[in-house]
Image 1: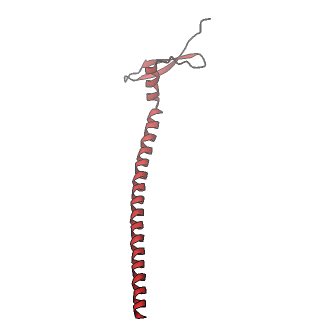
Image 2 (image 1 turned 45 degrees about the vertical axis):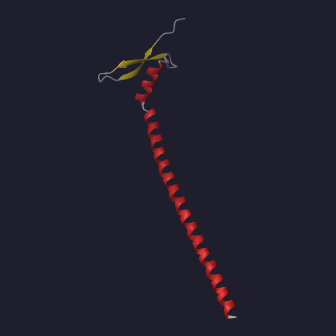
Length: 104
């Protein structure tokens, strides 16, 4: 009877030890996954900030004017004005609207 109790105690102890080792391995694996996800979140936040910066730069009137100038679109205002460029005192170009008369 003592031998049976001893054997049951050993089997139970081994089973509990295996369960603890398995739980710690899962915990470690979960910690690695959390760390990787936190790094990915940080990378994505930086990418989002860079994209917001790029959008704000592309929306600036100076960049839009430069793009219009380089594309030479000859844009016209629907009210009959043609957009032309004029050099300012500080060397920048700005777009000014000039009235043009359409020839029939």
